[in-house]
Image (cartoon, rainbow, N blue to C red; front, top):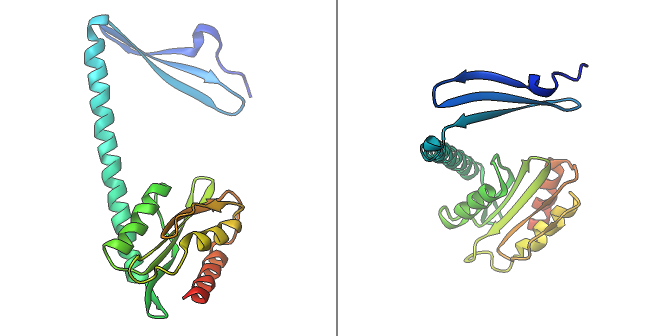
Length: 193
C-alpha cells in the first residue's frame, strides 16, 4: 500500500468562516489512518467553544448512562425470569450482557438486595477478558464464601478474585468455555449449600 500524503498534504480543509477554520489532519500508520479534527478559532471564541463542547460531552454522557441503565434493567429482568431454585435457594448462575464490570456488579447487587435472590453468579465477556461476579444474600446464605467460588472459577480463566465473602469480582484474560464454567460453579454451589 502507498504511504499516503506527506507534509502539508496531510491537512484537508473542511470549511472556514471569518472566525474559524475547520481542518482534518491525516496520520498514516502501518494498517490504519488516524483522522484528527483541528478547529482553529479566534481567542475571543475559545470560552464559547469550550462551553459548547462540554455541553455536548455532558449530553452524550447522560445518554450513554441512560442507555446503560436500561440495558442493566433489562438484564436484571431476564435474570429474575431465568432464576432457579437450588436446595430451596433462589439462584441465577449464567451470562450477563453489560458494558463493564461495574454494571455487572450493579446488576448482581440489585438482584440480591432488591429482588431477594439468594445467590447470583454472573459471567460477562467484556473487551478481551471474562469478568465473573458472585453475590449472596446476607440473610439466607451467610455461610457461603462467594470469594472462594469466584476465585475457583477465575482460575479457569487464569485470573483471581477479590476476597469479600458476600460480593466478589474476578475473572481473567484466558479463553475458557463459558458453559463449562457455569456448570462448574453450579456444582460448587450445590456442594456448599
